[in-house]
Length: 285
Image 1 (cartoon, rainbow, N blue to C red):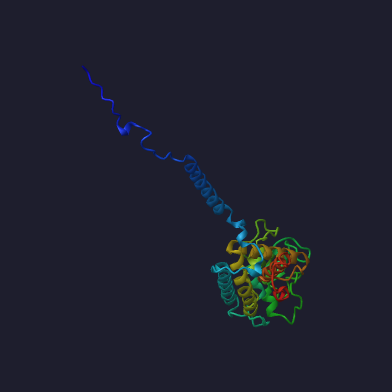
Image 2 (image 1 turned 90 degrees about the horizontal axis):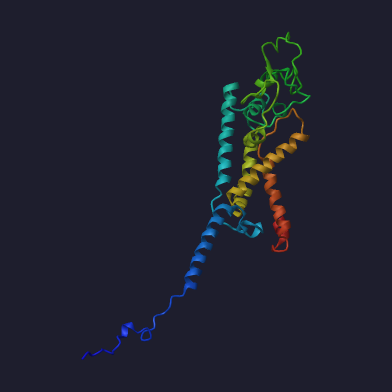
């Protein structure tokens, strides 16, 4: 006779122990959350330039990072100005232009032009200084101010003993990299290089004080990349605008146009966020 064991073990009875069923929706939401986080990190990595963190009002933002671009511009402009003085000493034997005196305490006009100042005849053809002619070198003019009153003289008589062996073509007059074609001025990069050239120590000091005061505040508020774009773009635009209306035979240098661009940025920001700023009139000063 066979006996059947009728007892059922508890471990095979599903209704004896209730194991919690894993919630798949939680796992799914975690995966989605991780995906969203990854996408956000990538978006911040590539689109941080347009982050709303750095948008107005400017007068109420106080970021605490170091204004590296402001200090870099001040340092580079000082190095370039020092190079101008050394170049002037190589040409004339003096660090400063003394005859005629440069009241800004700096090099001669010739050195500024050959160092990269904005000088229209070196950038495009102008009627007042055709590229195919020869001219009295600026150094010769400086040595004979009493005989020659014009700032730039077209060389008409090579028989003049003062002008003998003292003529300069426009290419040698401009210096730097020369022209790609000898009679076609094309040094348009002077729109950029002229930002770092200064007439003298007084000019450099005034610009530096303005940049230190404005650049420190603005770069901390809008970050270094935006500040670089703002500084360079306004400087180039100011040079281009001035080149259209200023006297073509007068050299110009310095980043004053960039400083005016920074001031313009401050006032545009103030206008756009006028209602959200306290003490608006105080901010205008």
